[in-house]
Length: 119
Image 1 (tube, one colour):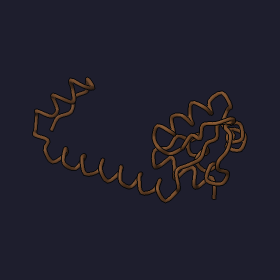
Image 2 (cartoon, one colour):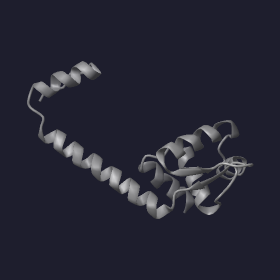
Image 3 (tube, one colour):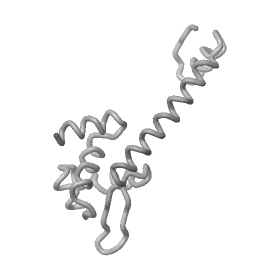
Image 4 (spheres, helix red, strand yellow):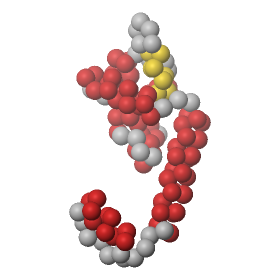
């Protein structure tokens, strides 16, 4: 079940380590970085960087103190946030696709990515 959860989180944009950390924090929160690293089997040298990155994304909260503790965003809130972000991206993409004009957009794409696409 945990492996399937980790795969599903990865499908939603989490890295493998982020998925393992989030799943760990759902079961064991709040926790110290060393506890998270051990349980999630994430290398200790990487744990703080990954946790800070997840905090920037809003998936993890940092509880300053001695020791510093970490907790995860409530799973229901996480799903709401991911759904909202996805729907926003989907709406933007739909709009952008419908505003493409033959030729003009291909020139912009070639300039930015140095590839040739013909409409």
